[in-house]
Length: 282
Ligand code: PAF
Image (cartoon, rainbow, N blue to C red):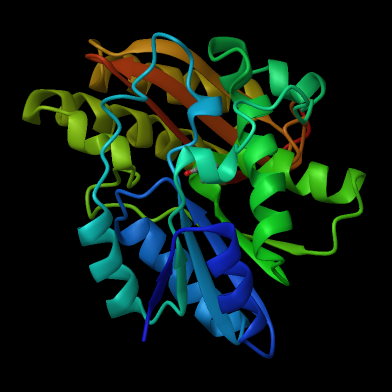
């Protein structure tokens, strides 16, 4: 049975009633198959699964979609029940931030100013602050984050290491539609034509990964990805398409790497990324 709790007190009681390990999946709701995969992985690795549902105002900029962000608690609970979640913590903003917006926030450091952070100032301060609060409130043994938000996953890992938080971070590979589109709660904003354009992002990453597999060096991998993006998504407003090492440090000349893309399609900002392996020293 899935227990819904909405206050810190009820959460503490529900948490205390569970013996064994607890895996936490943090979400902003609008759950989809990507979240279901996080929950499935959590169930495999922990005795109990706790899902948090909270649209965190701290991580939205003034011109972003906080008000429009889909809030679908009933449907989310249905998914959690079907997926065998033990506890859902769905607090109000006043419950998470009883003193109003916190004056003290987690500073994500230099990586927090790059890529997503460059386009969304303050975004990772907001994300890491709520993740730290939710870790303190839910006291997980393991936390599960999707690789879809790869910079978020990287920064959470960094925060957990830098602050010696007693929790293990588990990254879960991105879930895609059959045609390659990465699942995202924001996909529901896309019209049919915009969705077709959005497919260019995963196609570009796939082209880069294929080029790397065929032995292309870093520069040629980027060229392959850029040309597919330009052809498949001419209407997308590209923010970045970059190749980095797996920790998002400057790109490697060989070995494991990550390619990341962000673009605006219509009014929707989309991100995606893929792992690849650079076989040839450039
Ligand atoms: O990835 C998300 O949905 C959010 O950034 C998170 C981790 C739940 C924090 O609000």
